[in-house]
Amino acid sequence: MDKHRKQYTLATTLLALGLMATPSFATDKTPVQDINNGYEDYTIKRTPADLTPQERQVANRIIYACYLGCHRPAIEEVPETLSPKLEGFDAQYFYNQFVDMDMERQAGVSSQMKEMVYTVPPKEIADVSLVLSERPMKWNPRSEVVASDAYARGKTKYDASCKMCHGEQGASTNPAYPPLKGQMPAYVFEQMTAYRDGKRTNRQAAVMVPFAKMLSEDDYADIVAYVTGMFYTPIEQREFITGKGMPPVEGFVLPDTGLIQNFIDMHGEDNDYPKNPMDYTISNSGKIVVDNNTKLMWERDSSRIWMTAVEGEQYCSNLELDGYDDWRYPLMKELQSIADLGEFRPAINTDAFLNMPRLQSGVWGFPVSDHPDHAWHIGFPEGHIMGQHTASTKLVRCVRADNGAAYHNMSYVDNKDGTVTEKVTDRMWQQKIDYQRRNWLDSIKYCENLNYANYDDWRLPNIRELVSIVNYNKTSPAIDEEFFPNTPIKYFFWSSSTDLPGPTLFVRPLPPRKKDQTPEMLDHRQDKGNKGWAQGYQIGSGLGMSKDVEFYSRCIRNP
Image (cartoon, rainbow, N blue to C red):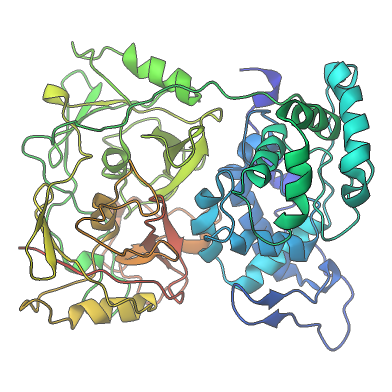
């Protein structure tokens, strides 16, 4: 691993991002207020000086989470990453781009950001935008780039076509145009191709299109060298495991989520419907874990080093444990099946699975997502599902099953009565939703009270069940349309599962593991800060969201 991929310690990152609350700035007696008409109609009137210490602290925690996850390669300046640096943008520009990630902005890997739009309320997005606006984007030009012909050519081309809007060498002072100086090269290059190809159309895209079409990709690369100080380096692409055609695992049973905690007084949340508790057997050698529900066989000890997607694939293909040599990357549904959502930091059974860091615990999962340079990962601090650039580094935990089987492809039956039965997991689904968006609690009530297709025992599915019907081999929608037609891809679907640590994931004191907790410790009905797990079907991502946000509901029952 080269010097540009060094791992930042938690302390270093905390200092770099200013996670600690800072002293308040002087404010007027009458606080300035933003105009808040919801996510897509929000006008920032405040300045960074108007932020309270508490607002700054919350914003810094959100920023820290961004750089701990998908934007980590940007802060480490991995040239191939498609994730940008976040500092230095005008606050309103940053806010607008953030909320546009749900459908309006289509370029690059913007769909990976879809879930992040709803993880925090609009005002907190504005707070984040304000904090980031006062931080300059770091400019660390590499000497070999500055001395190159590409850099010199890039200056000439940039000055002729870009300088008027984006300022001297991309150090924009115009709030309508983002800074480019120090930005990640692959990100800038891909945005140019997206404007050219009509994939990025939001906001002021029309201004950029003529310039993007006028310039060639060689011109893009030269301009990128000049403004970023790094060469554009395309990522090595290859065909990773897709899961297509792999048969179901014999004897498969869908495990529960691991949530045994109680969060509400009414009936209908995840732990009210126990069916198949998570259960494992460790091999005599101690090197393998067998999931007694899914029948999948797992490498017990995850990789000791972080690997790119290509390196991880090679690691699994070369692995031999207990006489088995057919190890492979896990597919997304398989990897999510071992996430124990009743635990956090890490969200996994640490007796069964070893070497799982509490925070930096993302594990590669496949197939690739909606971009050939992006795969998936489960973030095991709490179990979220998100994409990651294949040039980034994650942990690896290999899996195998007899007869080349996998938990990936589903088997549906249209019952012709508005319901669909899925035979691998043995569940019956509401086929036609009502297209009404509700908050988390009202979604539970809706399914509990639903009388549909002559059944009255419907419930809101847990997050494991919602993931089961994702088709990770397609997007927009990432679901089988033959059986679930007209599935919305804007917004998410609520599950009955609570995101246990919620917004305090990175700072919440660690309790004992749940097997060591008393009944009183498992009772969270007075804890009002929890989020709920929601699943998207644009590409298949899922994350904990504020329970007040209104999403769709698709009910489920056990046939």
